Length: 367
Image (tube, rainbow, N blue to C red; front, top):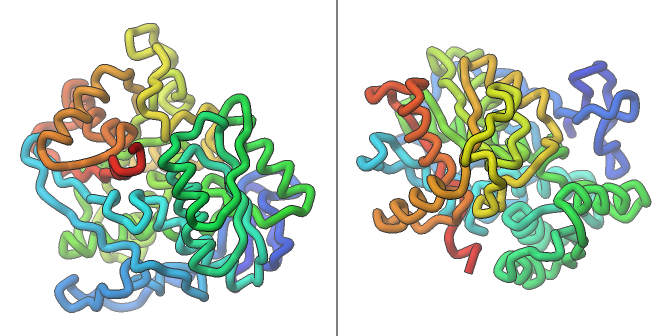
């Protein structure tokens, strides 16, 4: 079982059901030891047995046990209206890319003998953790905002998990979950803090490269709340580059909801525009304090990337355009294609740049 370590102070922590959820010394988010780089040339995707989903790339994943529902190898399709390719993460078992992190997180929990997990989520991550906990036979408490969408609440309840509604801000929900963890009520399966989650989201990059005959696009545009997909993608592309499997890293470009945009503010300040009004449509990324903000900023800067904030109008218009072209996604998902258009208008991307956009969540989760 892989140990945890603090990338800030270097302290190592033994793997156990009682392991810390963050560094006891400096409070920094912990990471898992990285597996050795794979040797040799990877097989073309036509020769891979993809029936194991993302676990096809088990040698990249620092988790031994497998709790799986066949997640991964989501379709990569042309999107001519946007002059891009879309990776359809919303066809995952629970309807979002969060299944990538849920399978590795619950796999690690099962390997450690964890009896109960605790998560805090506005929706998709909670549904994913609850579902994979059910698959693993592990109890789960999922802390949610009091006004959580009914569809997402039902997904949590029907899996057998216990939803815990918390009044107040999204930060209040997180704090309530942390209080429960520190009171010994369960193992923190946080999609933001738990390093095993990022071991799953990094497979997005590995899978994407495989689907493109082991090449990377010029850029990838992703929504950013806690940034689990963006940071996972960075780690995946970084491993591929260091192993000599891809020639270079793509630029990573993020998008946040206006009013909830600490990373965009780091790059651009806080402009007073119409987009400065809080974006309440993109509820899945309404995060003011990302748990790994320093790592996210480092990842963006390392790839020559950027992060912008968008208001409701462009996101709502893009959502309509997606639905009219056959992509039945949730509102938060529309932020990335909307940002692609904006980045081209800004001159950050050229018209002939090869761009991939993940469509992160299904419209079915908002019914």
